[in-house]
Image 1 (cartoon, rainbow, N blue to C red):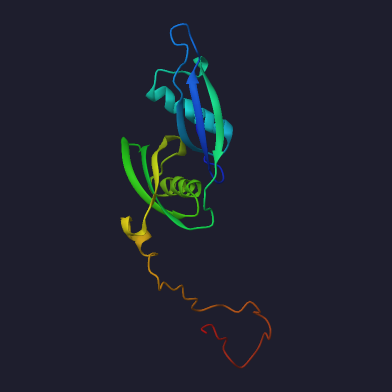
Image 2 (image 1 turned 180 degrees about the horizontal axis):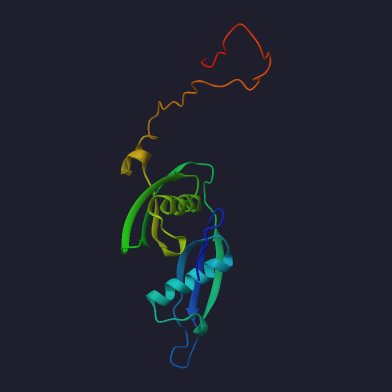
Amino acid sequence: FNMKALGDLKQYKVIGRSMPTDKQRVPPLYQMKIFAPDKCTAKSRFWYFVCQLKKMKRTLGEIVSIQEVYEKRPLTIKNFGIWLRYVSRSGTHNMYREYRDLTAALAVTQCYRDMGARHRARSSTIQIMRIEEVAASKTRRANIKQFHDSKIKFPLNHRVNKKLHAPRFTTTRPHTTF
C-alpha cells in the first residue's frame, strides 16, 4: 500500500490491540500518533508500523479507537522539530528537520512536500518518528532562525500598478517604489 500525501495531512491518535485469546485474555493496547490524509489511511499506517514493532497482524487485531487530534493554539505560529527516517535509492537515512507553521499537521505536510522536492523521497517511504514544538532559542537551522528577529521587515519594493492601461499613453513613467 502506498500512502499518498494528498492535501493537508491530519493528526490522528490510533489505539489498537491484538484480539483476546485463551493465552492472553487482556492484550496490551498500543497507541500511535499518525499523520495521514484520512482515517482509512491512518488505520493502514498504524498496522504498517505495528507489524514492524510488535508481533501483531491486522487479521488478528482490532482498532479500539481512532481520533483526530486538534492543535490547542492553531492561530499561533510555532517552530517544529521533526525526526524522520526515509528510504532513498541508496539506503535508509535518519534526519532532523525544522519547520515554522501553525499546527503540527501542517508542519508535517510541509515536511512531506519538502522531502519530495529536495530528496525525491516518496511519501510511502517517509516515517515520522517524533515531532516536537521547539523554543526559538533552541532552533538549529538558519532558515528558521532568520524569522526570530523582533524587528523583521518584509519590504514591498517595486510594486506594479494594477491599472496598467489607465491611461495607456502618458508622458510620465510609472512609479513602482513608494
